[in-house]
Amino acid sequence: MMKRHAEYVTIFNANCDATRPQTTAQLMKAMERWERINEQDMVAKGAQKRALEAQQRKHQMELALKKTKAADQEVFDATVNENTGDTVNTTTPPSSQGSASNGSGSSSNGPVLNHANNTEIAVAVADAAAITHAQKYEAEYAELIADVKRRLQADKEKKALAEKEAIAKRQASQR
Image (spheres, rainbow, N blue to C red):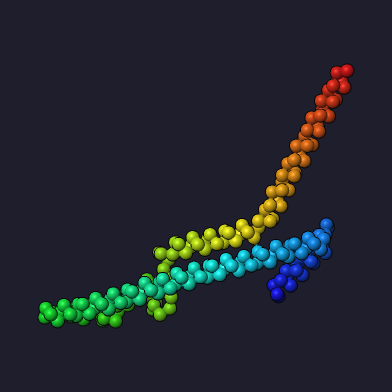
């Protein structure tokens, strides 16, 4: 409600300063359009947030799977070494053998984005942003296109009128 009030105050004050003020009905249409756009922005942001959370969950599951595989490998190696009588390699501690690194040397306690596998997420976010932009400016683009068409039509009419006047002048001078 605070955003809505701030937007209305902005539109109203801009209308007061305008050389050609809009009617109250036009201002209300502008507010309705703003509310639709604001709602669409919120939906798009929610979709982006859900996509990012899905990416983070996927990454956490991959990390857990890597840790489980490393632990299973350690158990397998220990079992093989017990059965063959070989000694276990103690140059690398088992705790570091099973830990997954994110490439930066930081711990893997929190979610770490895997930038190599986030193409689908990036595409989804970009698509959502493009759709939001198109919806947000759809009315403005339609108005601009209509204005350009009106101007082109007016130019054609002026050109046709000028040609008619030129023909009329030639015909008058020939008589």
